[in-house]
Image 1 (cartoon, rainbow, N blue to C red):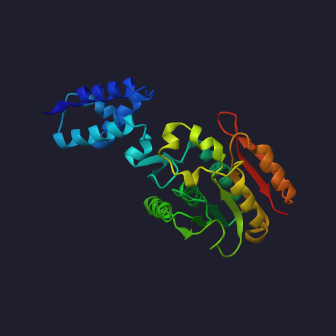
Image 2: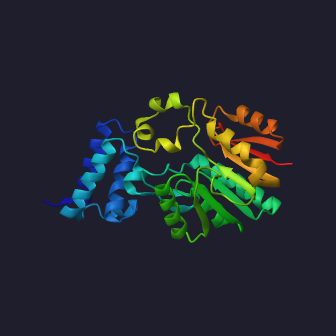
Image 3: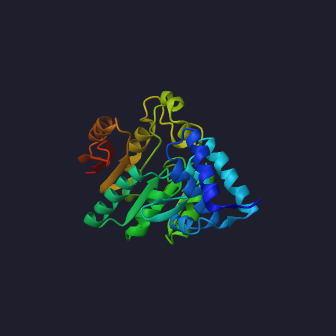
Length: 279
């Protein structure tokens, strides 16, 4: 039997709220908006419209997934980042607003220095690479060890009309040449902390994109050790970091003769971006 938009919206909202999902109202609206292809305003103005049985089935499926604490971005299959729409799936980390700080810092430096080439290491969904390519006049290369992640990144580049050179590579393994800027949001969570993460992250996002080794700094060390080969003179390295890693990253860059090293905070006031310049 068909049900109205309002009735189904209330039903989904109640089910999510009873499960302890704080964003139950928003999530219910997002699920119906996605399935019915209506804006959230249209859900209100068309609240007495009936929903077909096939659409109801999809809404029930999405609701069940959310009740299992699957992130909304995976359920919907996409999310917004830097004003663009990105496809996301379980092969990719979900692009977060915090990472926009990295992109904004990169864009500012590219414009200031006139850089022409950028390498994004561990591109995942391609959010950083595509955003830099979209908003600057640079040649962007992006690498990831995961082929499924790269396939998603390629789709996102095409979707947003950006030309990126994608390479399947374990960090620099298959990379050739040098770059004005290297940017990376590598896995940086300590291995021992993974099991304590929120279930939405722990059970659904790829561990490959989360686990940064015993102290969370494994990939930073590997990347920094290769910068003399792949980063041009007077080039820039930009890292996204965990909230407690600013001092360690600054020390590592200083030990490797970088200058003008700085840490920037995110909107929550937590250390988020480390920048350094090669001699």
